[in-house]
Image (tube, rainbow, N blue to C red; front, side):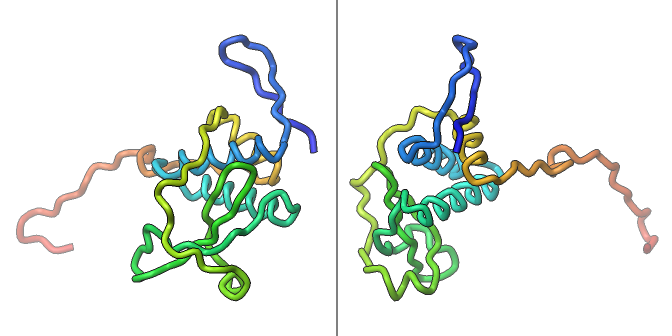
Length: 160
């Protein structure tokens, strides 16, 4: 697998980012951090999930156990799979086999933090897209870009 060439903004020099385990873990961390506040996070979470799945298959990441989810949504209780990759840990949705194979670690410890990452979101997305083979999907018009149409009001007493 070859690296991704990125032009540094400050020095204008090309920089190659190799898909090492450390760089991939930093890229996943960066994408995950930005996905939490993105207006449309689905693409970023998909990129994270696919990269982690590929790393698990290749043996570059390891499933540690199950944690209770901090944001269970509509259900009372939900578990997520804790995945360790280099010095970073991430959560992904569990499969049915995970419940039988992995130990349950209970509640998430808020004291454990991932280290800082030095990659920008653009660099991280490019690295993960080249690693997974996923392409960025751009929709032609989002809700904010749709053309404006005047509202049509019916006259009082008229029915349409």
